[in-house]
Image (cartoon, rainbow, N blue to C red):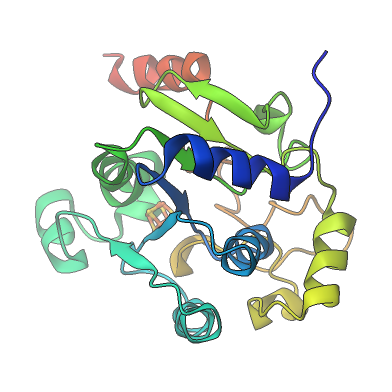
Length: 231
Ligand code: SF4
């Protein structure tokens, strides 16, 4: 069994091995803000991008600007091929309410594929304790689905580890966390979490969906695709 290393060590080694063909996918959760802070402190040559679905919350857009100012690192926007209006014309209004998997595919998965093309490795902010699908994540693993290396420096961290880092280093995070929004995604698919609920219960509330699909292991992603395409 491999022993987990400190996130700093993992990031430094990944930058040494893969720069300039490595990037952090920033989703503006607490964990992503911590990784950005670590990259900035160590001046690591790791690019940063975010999937701008066009539907992020105003507080998230404000945090984006604040993090750029604080770190001096540009956060590149990766956008879907269609505006919200074009998507409504092609797929019907409010696709997220009727077919959230299709909406995530168009606004997140396809743009992610474009962002990862040409990279040898990507850095993500996932932690094992977040969901069942993330429970077996290694700090460094082969991402068969996208054909590159996936680096998860915080895989072994707990929510308390993240909170402690944020406090210690004064890392800016989304003010919505203090209003009950634990996991924050797009505006139509994010609600506050009620006391006693799972931290991701506020995402796609009322639907069986728990992941946008960015971090699903290949086996589960393939299975979901087969189910979606079934007659
Ligand atoms: S989180 Fe919701 S609005 Fe955002 S891409 Fe997925 S389904 Fe669409």
